[in-house]
Image (cartoon, rainbow, N blue to C red):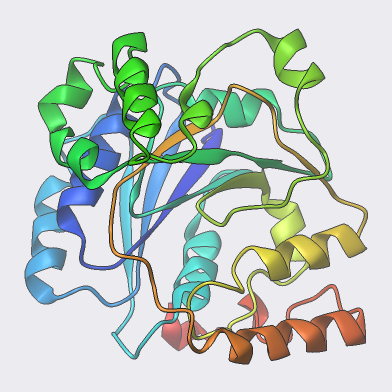
Length: 280
């Protein structure tokens, strides 16, 4: 029997956050999935730690690594897609902890030619430091009590997007208040693998953060008739605090995106097909 979903976690050196993510995935209320760590060149000691964890979890855990040659997130994501055994792919960033119903929710709302998208609670540094593996194992992270702490922290203008942490599993409400007009965040979206193959995966010309792995692939999938659906009160993530990434060089990525729009090209110019067997 094939695995129902492949959860791809983009990662670089933040081992504490990865441990929390893997622990949260262990607590999922759906079990038929594999996890692939898409590692953009973490240090040897980090790789050693990940290898030591491989038998610690009930789900299959794969580690796909490439040499550190700068920001090459899209390349390692493409390698992870190639390695994925499931027909359905879920993307998670390495600083976002999934809710315990995260995998089940993505699958529940999946449809052919649909991108399922979610959002994240942007936790403050104080709240982020409270999250430990035992806190997740006791399911306190997913409790209504913790949501109230998120809400209180947001009223102090520390945590942002607290409303994204309210879990309400009522399909009629999730669909009725859901959105087909909001865009994709690279940290939290999913679709069938055949869609990724159809657009040649992520465009590896993007070698700077902030624009590229989400906006670009969303645009190209929409050229093929895909819709984005964001259900309300489901598909929750908890973003661990870190200093904002620099956006000083964002213009470089915008020029690449403008080229995609101008050409109306659905397939990535440098995508999965451009990865040689030697790279895998």
